[in-house]
Length: 621
Image 1 (cartoon, rainbow, N blue to C red):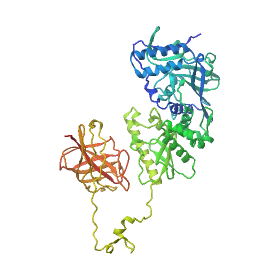
Image 2 (image 1 turned 180 degrees about the horizontal axis):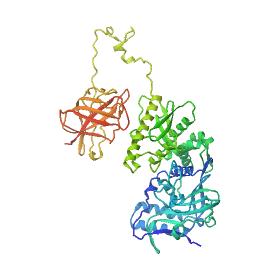
Image 3 (image 1 turned 90 degrees about the vertical axis):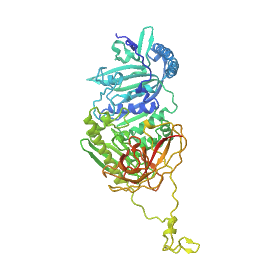
């Protein structure tokens, strides 16, 4: 019979490995929300056709004696603490001191996650098989569905982030012909260390010692790890203590899987609480669950998902199809209501992915003159789903063409993504663009334009519009916030901000007008440099290509020599707001009196009026 033991990989090259695995650190801040999203996704992908996948989260407490090789775990943690202290690594010392307390307790808590009505993790434990991909692989995809949500990539590290021992146990039952097969294994991610037996790396496995293989006999694994039904179980050993962990998980699965839950593709049971189609509305409004979302910093996103769920349910919505050349078809559903956040949610496989397409030129952050709305976008054919999948980042919360290794593929993806973004915005504009409102009486202008006898009177009677002269009120210089410097130009200078002037441009090729007015604002003293406003003569802006309103061409004649930094603001009846520029800022080398023409690119399309201001850095006296 093969020996069952806990073994760490030998450190034959005398490498030094810390415990701070980048994949684990990604999920360290919100481990419960992350594990809910990642395991829910993987379970959904492994679901049996025609069945509702069920995922259960439960906290269990077991005697230390029920942990396989508990004494060896304790000794290994002790040796890792010795190594951390030897290197005087405060972060590792703190981690392994807490790990030592956890592993030495008589009762140890685990978070057990089990799924049902799935295919399980197909074995055997060899390259290319799902069990091997989850437990022993890095950067390897083994999903049999090209539109699946994940590939056992970085997301599988979430379970280690909520373990105070960075240790997980896995078990699965999967069909092989007419038989059911069982596999189980434990995996720890500590740090490199030394024992009487030799020098070892950070990764260790509990299971069959020969070739670090899993156990295939359920009778010799602890009861809490056994399975009899097809499916997968994952246990986080030494579960992190958290009072509201249940609500954090419920908030996460609602936020990310509301559509799949509604379509009965998946359901969850969290510490006995049912999260199924019939419960979604009530759970979205539950104060405890809302608080759970707020605790993870996802309160706003949780509320947005609740509104997207309404968009999914409402019958009176605007629905259109978007056809993207060489990619596939998408569906957009839009709903208007006062108080909606003017935000777009993009889903795939019933799972929320992102609310922007910034890597394709549109972050969907600004919708001026639009009614309050929400929109839900999703692929409706397999080709569109495949396209989205290959562009998803490891956390499945963004689409990025730079993930493609082939330059031609990247260019094609960028083109298609920009087309999708433009068509989404076109549909939103057609649906939610605010119409002109009714006429409004402006009483404050009545003294200038009054025609009825009840208008504002002078000392000598009513204002005679044919002879009276109206004095222009004195111009008050506006204080402008200078644009953010590119990183290489940042300094530690301190001082008050300077101002600029503006040029308002109407939409179209010949838009824009001459800017006027000197910049205002007082310059203070700084440690290194001060920021001085620059007067720009004959300022004008135009949109060179009406089909690309994200690009604005600025003309001006500088009054100074040297490098001038440009900033732009939206203008209108409300307070001005800075326009985010691609690259973070724009600087121009200027020669006094010499006409300048420069193209500025916004982060998102905008064709309305703008205000331009400039400033430069000067050495402090």
